[in-house]
Each structure stands twice: as structure tokens, then as C-alpha cells.
Length: 109
Image 1 (cartoon, rainbow, N blue to C red):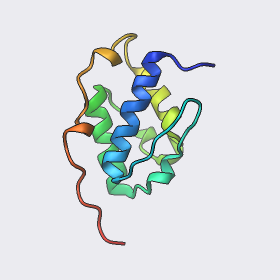
Image 2: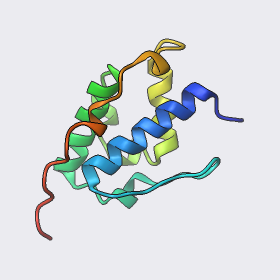
Image 3: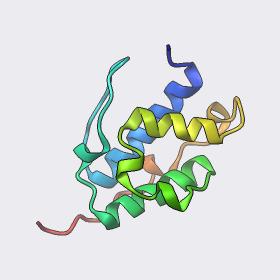
Image 4: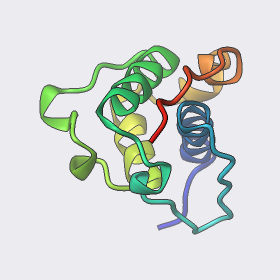
């Protein structure tokens, strides 16, 4: 199934959120996907990512989803977000905080 323009917008903004929190610079072409594991989010940065996504898209995650195994990739997570939003809303939302707020520093490994 081909991605709609709204789904593509959600995917792009979600990728920006993940890159912001993880301090990465991943990009995806049409039909490509990135596992969330690639961002190496620990429990605190995963929580920060989910909070940023909730603020950016105006949605709330169910507690059952607060586990990286339940949201395995950028596109599956974007599809979930798009399903929680009223039709046409993604393109009307202001840019999320992903582009405005630097990510907190990651602890040394």
C-alpha cells in the first residue's frame, strides 16, 4: 500500500523527533524504514522521545505501547500516530518541538 501525503508528513516529523533525541542524522527514502533500535534509545531517551512525539502530534500513547518492541520501526510508529489523528490534521499542525529544542545530552557509555 502506498503512503499518503499525510502519512509521509507524519513519518518525516517522527524521524525528526527520533533524530533529535538520539542525536543522529538518519534519513529514509520512499519505501525505506528504520528500526527504532537503530537510534539506540535507552529507557530515559525512549521516554523523552515518546513525550516529544505526544507534544508534537497532540496524542497520548497507551501505557501498553511504552515499549520499543510494540513500536518497532519509524513507519509502523508513524502509521500508529496517523491512526490516532483526525484526517487532514498532520499538515495543519505547527512544526513540532523536534526542530526547535535541542536534545538533552546523552550519558556517556
